[in-house]
Image 1: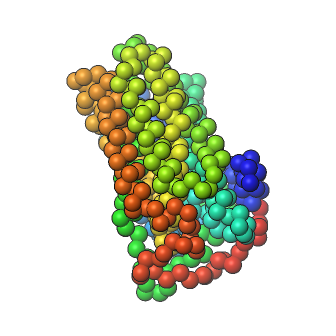
Image 2: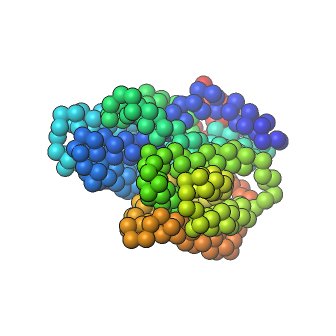
Image 3: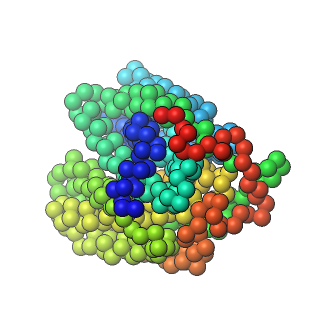
Length: 431
């Protein structure tokens, strides 16, 4: 099946409304951190306060989201995502209202942290739905699931390009809180729609038998979490180095646009990844992508102008999505069927923690040695990612071509048992 035919079949199975809803529902996550930074910085006159608000929101979200995913794995996505979407939407509106009322920075930082605790991780939750959605596709299911993960990787990258762009436009033409108001509306409308979509009831189709635990924390998952931590470190350090270089060049406002090019290349590569033949093992894909990250990040050490940085960042983006899509695909396979949501969200949270780590370390080094020191953090992270990919060849090889219900062995303490709506085929989902 050609990539175009795979995407056409995939979207027809899910329905156009679902695809659009799931994409728009993930935009608030991409907008909230920068939105909090801009809002709090402008209303308090302190970049330190703005950075603290954004950092608090991000860290709390990274800690709370795996806990929410664990609950979703037990009771289903619908109630968890519904509560998250409503409370996070109201939290963003409350943050804007508090800032407009001139509340102290400590109050705004607290409000940002509380909001971060409820921000839904739509991308990981959407990934969980594709296997049950495609359950009625017979021998085509493995190909469709692979295509779905390629799409999800591209959609995530596109959201982190479009979200901040929308935010910047609204802040420029309206008010500092306008972007967060839009994010809140998107959560309340499309976040709740994603929660209520009929596909949500398929995600609780497999559960462990009573009294039996499904082991989530394993060596394979640990390797993948480290892989995502390292790519997050690349994101944070590249963004920091870009900001330092743009500021020294006298164009600080261009930093966001230059960094967005990383996502542009990643979106294109993510969509195209569906064309890779299934016979190419996932561990091989991860190794090639990690090698590409190292090779294409090395020129960062040589850039001295925004023009040269644009070219390097654009090319680097073309290996970001293949790397991340492969780690998430492997994550879906190494996790027990009852804990896939937790695994997907942990991988996303690990990326966020890596971003914070990369930003902090690169920022400290850049203060003393400039943008090249920040970019050196990115190169070091890609070298470490290549080592992790080499290790994965030994540990994760048995998951290369297996999916749930195929040849992936269950953990010894895991029992797979169909319950609820497990019998539903994808074509039976009302749209």
